[in-house]
Length: 102
Image 1 (tube, rainbow, N blue to C red):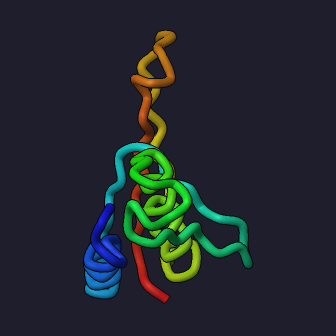
Image 2 (image 1 turned 135 degrees about the vertical axis):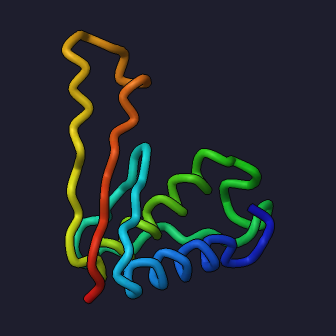
């Protein structure tokens, strides 16, 4: 959280992975900002208004990944995890597969 633009190496690896024709698998939630909306970008902690709030930084990074994928991924598919019985939503993190690059 204290590193400037800490998500940049991850975004670069996502770009390289998809541009090379490989798949990206994401377990858990991802937030795709609406078209035209920019993701939340924060100054390094503790200089942002959120100090050391790791939840807000996590949201920011998730939005930045989502915006990159929204704008550049060729295909995004959600993989259902039907277990045939009720479970807690916290036990169903979701699975997303991303392919292609544009």
